[in-house]
Amino acid sequence: MADLTPDPTLPPAPLVDVTGLQEAVAAFARERDWEPFHSPKNLAMALTGEVGELVELFQWLSEEASRNVGRDPATARPVRDELADVLIYLVRLAAVLEVDLDEAVRSKLATNAAKYPLERSRGQATKYSRR
Image (cartoon, rainbow, N blue to C red; front, side, top):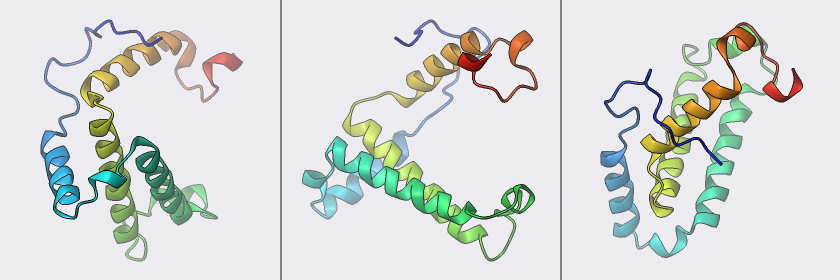
């Protein structure tokens, strides 16, 4: 179970405020009568598809080339578009499931801080369960 204790190191202002985006995406779906298709299952599958399209842009790139996709004219726009698609589906899924993304992020950051204490994690890419 996630740690719901607020992290005192996080600012009191929202970390994630997607209210405007949620409203815009809901209106977009409503205008097209797509709401019946926006079940959690369908939205999760669509999100997965969009993440796959994002990943495809990085496939076979070197580490260095992957760092430059946002600046490379051949990939900057496609990466931006796929990131937007991922965000749109993620926000829509959270809205349909009535998940407060700000609370979820704050809780997860607190959980991760406990899993990855600075003294054991700094400079380490190894998962906490493998240390």
